[in-house]
Image (cartoon, rainbow, N blue to C red; front, side):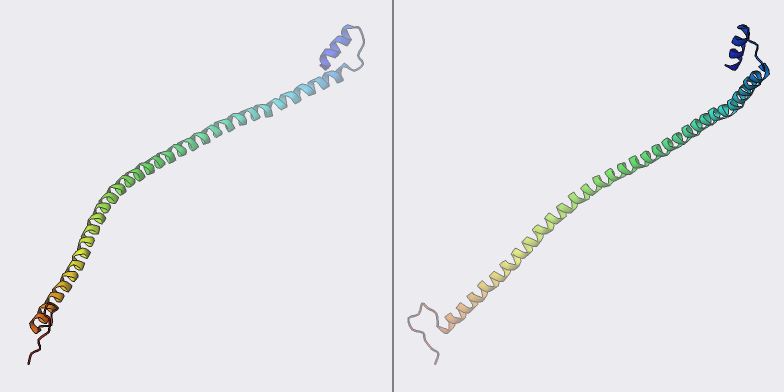
Length: 146
């Protein structure tokens, strides 16, 4: 911009007192721009390196996540197998429980039947004994042994 302004002023016929100062300022600006281009190039390179590093990290995270999801899938498959096995075992245990419930109920019933039969036998024995003595209700008068 300074050079262009100096060129315009010179073409108009104005004598610039110190054309070297404008030239020096323009050169200083150009050198500063070149110096700034170096950090800018480094910034771009760093951005590129950061993008590459970030891409690498994202890729590593994706691989880790994929491995984790595979382990999760294996765990879920194992738990499904365990649930299926548990259902089979519960079915078998239910059958055993029903069988033992029937066995227990039958044994309980037999126990009470034997107790009742024992009572019937005891009552029958008592009636026979009373009949031998002659104290049954069918006799009008009981006879006593002399």
